[in-house]
Structures are given as C-alpha cells and as structure tokens.
Length: 395
Image (tube, rainbow, N blue to C red; front, top):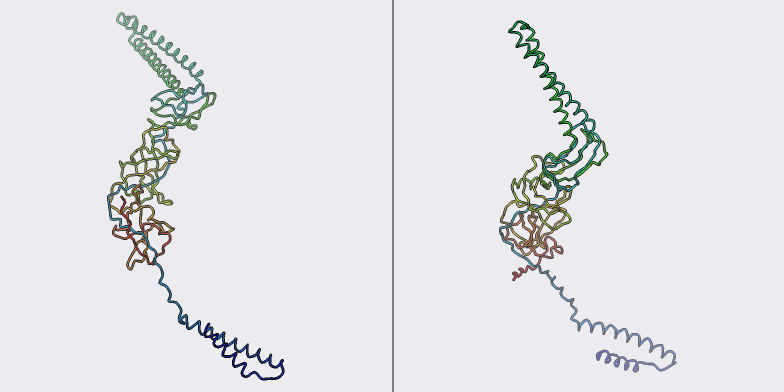
C-alpha cells in the first residue's frame, strides 16, 4: 500500500507539471484520461505485489489418510462340530387303524386324539345285531349235530352187542359206524362255523394293534364303515416320535447312526435330546439332500406334522474360531477379509461350521495364523491399504 501511495503522489506531480493552460473542458478531459491510466497501473502493481508476497507457488498436496482396522489372529482350538438342519416332526411308527371285518354302522367311539391306549383296547364298536343272530343259529346247529352223533353212537353200540348173537350182520355194524362218524363230523363242522362267526363278531370291535398314543380320529357314531376304506384312527406306537431332518449330501456323509442331536420345535425354545436312528440310503437328485431320522421320546410339545430345527453333534475338530462380526457373506458364499502383504486387504472364502456363544467355527479357508479383520469389513474392498491394529485381549 505504501508503494501504491508513492506512485500516486508521483503521478499527481507529473500531471500538475505537464497540465497545459487553456480551455477548462480540455483540461478536465486530459485529467480523466491520465487518472484512468494511473488506476490501471496501480491495479497491475497491486497484483504483482500480491503474487510476490504469496511466494507464487501452489501448496503441496497432502498424503491420503489410511483407515485403521482392528485385526485378530484366531489360531486353532477344539470346537464341537455341529450340523444344523430343519425338518418335520412325525410319529416314529405311525399305525393306521381301520375296519378288519365286514363293517357296518358305528355304534360307539371310545377314544379321543391325545389318549393313551393299550394293546387290544377297543377304540370303537360296530353294530352286530345280524351277526349275533347268525351266531345263535350256528350254536343251535351244533346242538342238533351233537344229538345226531349221540343217536348214531347208541345205535352202533346196540348193533355191536347183537352181531355176536347173529341178529345183526357185520355189514350193518359197519354201516352204523359210518353213520356215527358222519354225525361227529357234522358236529365239528358246526363248531368251526360257530367259531368263525364269533371271530367275525370280535372283529366288529375296532381295537388298537399296539399300545400307543392316539394321533387322529376320523370316525363318528352312526357312520357306516367298511373294510378297505380310509383309516379310522392313527396311532403312534408307544408314543415314540422322530424328526425327519433334511441335510445336504456332504453333511450327510459326516454322520452316523447313534450320534446325538438337539431338536427345537417351532414356537418353543426348549430343546429335546434325541439320537440318529436311521440315515437315508438315497439322495434326492433334484435337491441333492437326504433325510436323517432322529428318534425322540414322547413330549406334548412334539406334535407330528410340526416344523423343527435340529443341531446334530458330528464330533470335535480343531478349527479357527471367529466372532460373527468378522464373517461376511454374499452370493458367492461366506468370506472374511485378511491383511496380506504391504498391509493390503485380501478376500478369503471360508466354510463355516457350528455357531455358538464363543463364535463361528471356520472349517476350511483359514489356517488360524492369518490377520483377520475383526469388524468394519463392509467398508473395505480387496486391495485397499490399511493400518492394522491388533484387538485387545478380553479381560
């Protein structure tokens, strides 16, 4: 600013020195031109002075700030290898019960779903009025046949006494013996027919083939039933239940009969202990899954047809254990970020195992010595350079 004032004072003196005498109008015009020149020179001088004072150089660009990430080296430790599965509950041995005889009109139904029944217990009865009359008729036929047999026996005995005296021929004795044998055969035939009718009468009682739990009832009094129709009752033998768990074929290969499992039905947090009693001998070619049948003891919370989740213990393995925040997933599967050479982010695909309060077991993909990003992996990309910081040990 001081340099600018000096220049203005200098030029003001120059103007006064060269200002010609004459017409005032011409003088004023000359002054305006001269002042415009002075203002332009002052502006240029101010710009030059600013550039000189600022140094004339652009500021140097700042280096980028690298993000800091928390890492953990998981190592390896013994973990229980659990396989998770879902499926339906069912009776282990479901017994459909129908009409064994000729059927008829149902007169009584004696049980309800949820009742326990014993072997041979009557579940329902069918009208038997006609069969009772037929049974009485056959009983009378037995009495008539027995009377004929007694008469034939008496006549045979008399003929045998008279044959020695010559009053009856031997041929007559033989004829009377045949008559007696035919009468006895008619007695046995009548008795067999009577026994058959009694068996038919007994089959009009619909009975439980084994002890168990009544699951369903599809019969009411007054209903007409016949053999070969739909089951009238469904029973669970001894109340035993099971879960039909669906598993991928690679998980199925890791299991064996007798391994333990915990089954949790939908709607409850209670887990029920069971064990595998059968592995599917075939794999569904469409879903690439097989069925594992887990035997369960009866409990009212285990309802056949319900949905449940299972955790099957397939043994113990040494594997890295990571918190859930370290494991991510996308359309390609599960993965983690590790810090590689030059502190750059590297994606590593992994196969996860059992999930527990301690973390997620990594069955493959990690040796346990890698520096794994503990959290904030969603904000990183492969190839990013970071500043790794080891996680603090838990107290």
